[in-house]
Length: 312
Image 1: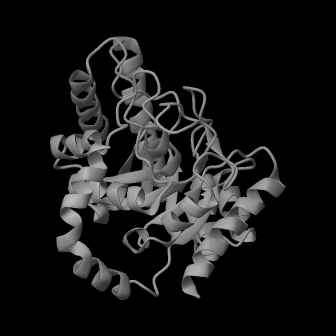
Image 2: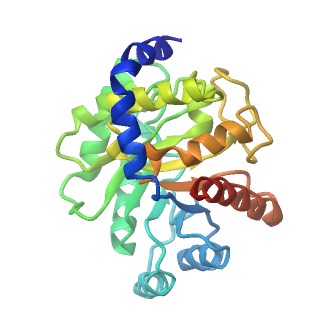
Image 3: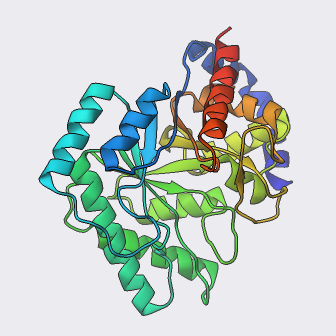
């Protein structure tokens, strides 16, 4: 693994700095949350998250599998903001809908995607959330370099003229399934360099990274992955971690989230991620399958136990 070799070459000169960093953030712990349902309105996600003891939350602001979105009314926005003040959840993330493909080669799909993403931005600004998470998209029918250029142009066009000072767009690393770009951290770095005037950051998905070829199962592999993250996008820009196990095996380029400890990454490896001092500033969001409320609570409990174990 190329990243592992590069990491080993740098490791000797960085041990002292890492020890100092670890000591500095030893008492720091990530904020924990999950992707909450919005049945009954976006504010319901905040209430569900608070009820389950979360400190942060992710939600959709609309149906994630359709182009048409029900407009947010003044009452919707007011209730959401009132509920947020009451629950004191922070940060709050919105995940963009699944149909958006900012790297599309088909002109009709590209135009729909750009319009839909702009709508997601406008909704995020109305609700006053901290982050909007988006996948870079699929470059099917084009080379990877063209896909990255298309995505960068889409980001600029969708954001044009919007006051984004209080909102940060988080580019999520992908599993690389099909023709998806964004499965290497270098892709995300290239997008950030291509859009210097946009407030871009990164959402690090553990399952996606694992199936894209970053082997985080052992401590050395995790350190190598963190090292690559730092030297590409910069760890300070990693504002969220999608904390998932993987139902798909290592380097399979397949996107299949799974319950914590029941997939190919495993409890021990994910515990190291949760306890890593250089990720402690990020919001940890569970995106495990929401097929059983009991299972979802169990995943939250497991993540919380990882962090508590580190505190002790």
